Image (tube, rainbow, N blue to C red; front, top):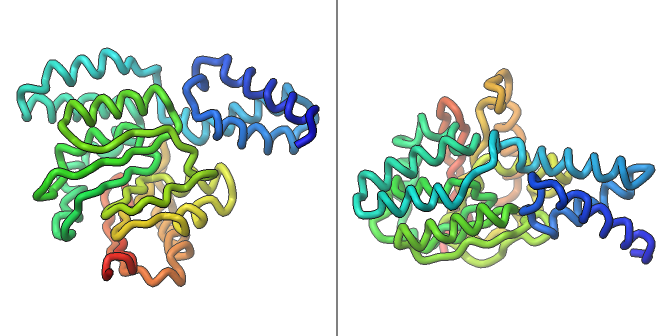
Amino acid sequence: MPMKDNQQLDALVTAVTAAAKYRHISPDLIRRVGERELAARPNLKTAVKAAKNKLHQIGGAYFEAKLDYAAMLQQLKSAADSPDSFRQTCHDLMRRHASTRERLPILADFYTILADLPDIRVVMDIACGLNPLTSPWFPFAQPVEYIAYDIYADMIAFIGAYLQLAGMNGRASVRDVISRPPTEPADLILILKTLPVLEQAEKGAASRLLDALNGRYLLITFPAQSLGGRGKGMVQTYESQFYAWADGRNWQIERFEFSTELAFLVKTPLAGQ
């Protein structure tokens, strides 16, 4: 990239991260989105506005208010001595993120679809949001190592502290999974309502992620309705899209439809090794 373009990109990143809403987003993601918008826009001002809009679509739309992670962690610490209270606190905190709030009505049934999976010891959560707080509902016989990725540094710091508090081995890391798809092995990879967001951010990103992942089982889900509550045709659209992405991958697939989420449990060829 020429020096002038680099200077413009640096200026765009500075302008975007000056806003509190975008300050904690992965710098890799901001630079990648910014580079594309600078190439498509006539000037820096319009590119900054377009980059902010794209980042909102990718992640910001799921936050209705700024989360106080320190207060949330203190609530969890106060409940840590009682498994029932800890579980209820996790349930209450998940209401603060739109994606996990949509999962709460089906949570009691959602993870039962994983109950028969053999020897799940490492779980990876792609674009995790607050979903690691659902771990008290896992049906696995043994503790799991939890690997969580998201684009928000402040959220990831909270998730890392949560994993420690919950007594779970693992790590939480900031990662732009479009530019750096994770390739480490996992027994189960959660890709919950993520593929459409990636594809909206960059065409072809969903397929590239699926190509890179190294999991025995995948749980891939799609929203059954929009954030505004509209659901006309969404299940059919996403189901068609999923099977297009699955074509030629030699997957064994089970389909589950919940009131708020369409789910596919995938057994990959790695599960037979």
